[in-house]
Image (cartoon, rainbow, N blue to C red; front, side, top):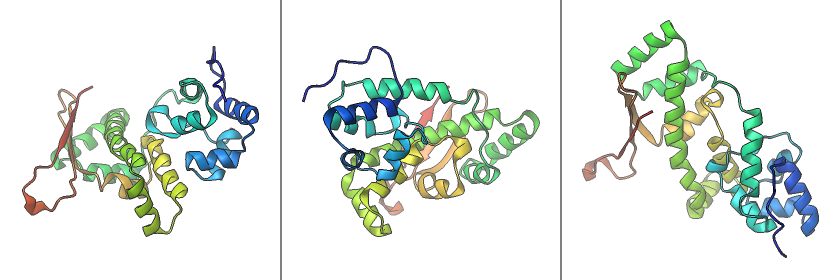
Length: 228
């Protein structure tokens, strides 16, 4: 089975998938199994009820491209164009409960100053910082998709199937600050982010990551620094 020629211009992801499934004589259920996601999730994408995931934050396009023998970048091209059409013009502020949880991880003095500035100037500055903090967290969580053993262990521990466990990770990776819930913070952010701070004059963000080793090991916590 040969790959089709590369697309000359992007089309909707669902259109490309439906067309290729028909060409190769495969079912949606077979594609879901190959991509290791629940059937309902893939059906939602094919029906246009769910936006295609962000290409840089998923392994789905690689899995589906290999299974359907698509041209290498077709799905990424289509998903990027489709998401650009539906992207909000401006990021929305997170929920107050989420803002409180994320600020609790911040240096206390900086957190108080950020709250004062938010009260005076609006949510834009804090929303941008939370997006950058979320970017760091999602970058760490993304690596979990390649750790099949840990995913299987987590699925068994919670009584989920592997596709459901993967879906939980994939859905978090596609979130923006306004869509975060307190449960997302507890499940994904707090176990990975020890604390964070920002240099208010320069905007440089410093994130200290949690480590798995016992504290008495003397190992220093890794940190990430991000400018604008």
